[in-house]
Image 1: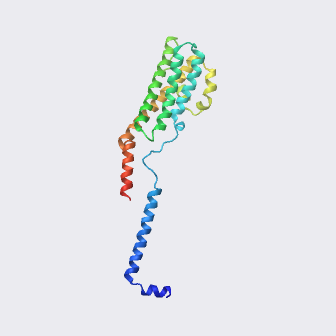
Image 2: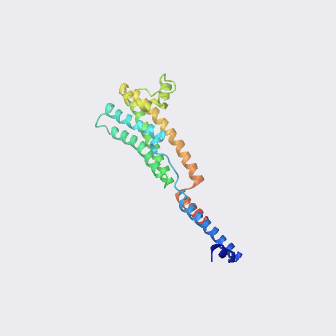
Image 3: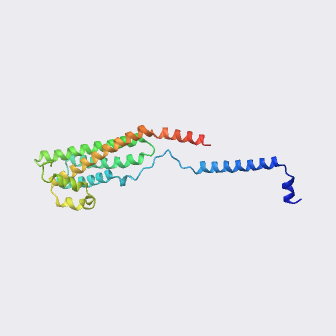
Length: 220
């Protein structure tokens, strides 16, 4: 019996049932494929820490501090290690906090706050250096204050600072670093506020994981 005759002899209700089953199977396959290929959403995306302006500033602070301590402090002075370690902590904790952000908001906030505290400690060391040596800390009334602030905010400083500090004396370097530290502390403060706001709105990793699991089960 040919195919045309078979179709003719097959009851219409059977044909409809087969058609519905085929449609359902096709839809089920598409849904399963969609679930299998849907992106994981509970891990937030973060840019690389080296692209953060605050990290770039703290990297300059570290490099300048290392140069400063090697040229203007005695090798046996305990302040050398304290300043270098504080500068390093400011830089490294930003990097580690950024890397931890995907899995722990608490760690991200904690390390970012440690970075801020380390830079505040380093700021005190530079201010102490100027004060005990009767050198000027440049304030808003100093003739070079505004120009220094503008230079510290510029893109040029990232390319030039290594060569520029070699032409500066200790007072100039200290004031440049103080300016950069103030910028970094301000940016870290804003970053901490953003982190806290995001945590309140979105929750931590456990909450996001739970919600993603619920969404997955509801869509099956």
